[in-house]
Image (cartoon, one colour):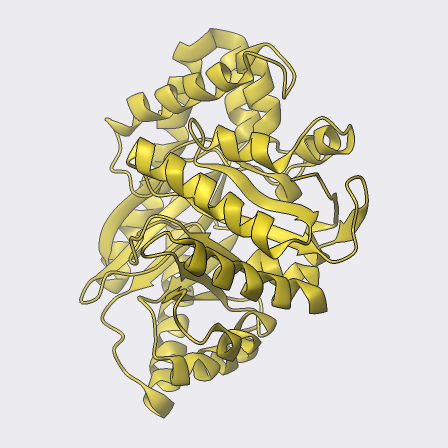
Length: 364
């Protein structure tokens, strides 16, 4: 029987206002406290998170390198997100941040072509040296700088507040529940797993004094534990056949129903990050998917255009950012985009994305 895991516990450090050398020491102290609390909470609840993360509300541009130094010292023990930078900033000064392992997001505050092209040029610059670097940067198309979600790279923090949140990995667990009892079973399984994750949040909150923010009940994959597998099961068709989007919507409605029973935070929708889902990689390799189709799914799915390798084109990638911004405005929900533009690639080529393995390049 498939189980579930706590994907991440994220500390949204909104009171960490230090700068310069003090910022480095404050971050390292917080990291030590966070790791100790998660260890204790794991023993108490029987659930050990796959990742421990700290998200900042944003730092001064001149302090970005200090955050990068802390990340290099921490290694894989704890991941850092430096928050959101406006697309109007001098983005080239940030190129060393993702190279150090720190995540960040670029904010399209006005959702203009000028902003979108600047963000696209920055992503192209990163990807041209190493496509895996583009996986550490998301484009925030909502204009909302301080998003409270455990999911990287869009996670941030609210200035003046310390909040802890959690996320789950549970697509196969939900698929088994749906196979047994349909949508009712799906809702029950979401509540069961979400309640266990909430217990972790409460325990970590008690140990650290961070506010217990909630659980993001989003269905997010990790390779063979496939969100697409669940979505195809519920919809009854293979992606991208007609009818698939309604299955996505049914899953999101089940999450929404479960959200009334658990304190939630973040996106709370199905996620379809291409490079993180083995089944989705296989569908993309069949040649039937385009980036525009995945962008369209943003109308019913929080991350329809996430972790997607495409042929390099500054203007086309900028246009995709703006298309998803239109869906975000129509939905009234926060959305983000992670695209990996690959110089010289054609649809059907494959690109190495480091720990995510290789993924197919799809047409725009």
